[in-house]
Amino acid sequence: MQLLEDRIQREGTVKTADVLKVDAFLNHQCDVALFDAMGEAWAEHFAGKRIDKILTIEASGIGIACCAARHFGNVPVVFAKKAQSINLDGDQYSTTVYSFTKQREFPVIVSKKYLNAGEHVLLIDDFLANGKALHGLIDLCEAAGAVIEGIGIAVEKGFQKGGDELRAEGYDVDSLAIVESMDPQTGRIEFRH
Ligand code: 5GP
Image 1 (tube, helix red, strand yellow):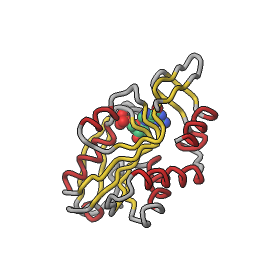
Image 2: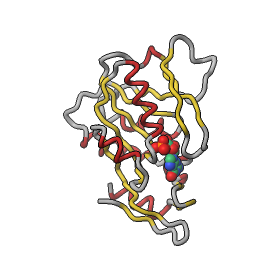
Image 3: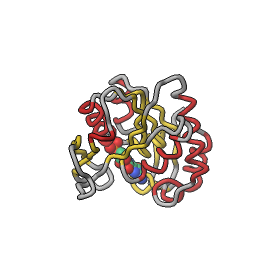
Image 4: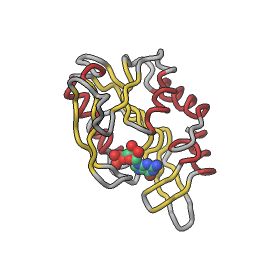
């Protein structure tokens, strides 16, 4: 998606060899017009598929998933929580995920009330690196008996293994920008097309 690639080129910074910072429009400050265009692009890609619900993971997935839902007939958005809370009552599906950015394990939890057998689900997240977060969401869907129709990603880092693995597993992964390489020394970012 040209709009997203241009934005990454203009405002993204290559923090390290494998961490891209896009706080100016995605991970801290949110550009909702861009989010809306991203939702439109996913709706075009997944057109014809039955999507009953969007499942994402807190925190940065929530904004993009909500904007996307407007393009999927205002389906509900459920976000998996990364910590237990007294507000999370009743039965839950839960798994553990290793965080790429925080470099530690954390729980990924969703209430059984909001993920049901037979529901057709679109998974959405901001970044795809090694695929741990997505596999956590897949585990939750499998536990619930929900059907995964596809995966929408804003930024995939193509030089990490998550995207290729998920596609090899048979998932329809639509990444709006795929970073082929990036260099923290020069700041140069190249995309896969
Ligand atoms: P994975 O689980 O695929 O290894 O990593 C994906 C998760 O880690 C995403 O939910 C995202 O929050 C975070 N992440 C991974 N790589 C990056 C990155 O380069 N930049 C930012 N901002 N977040 C990342």
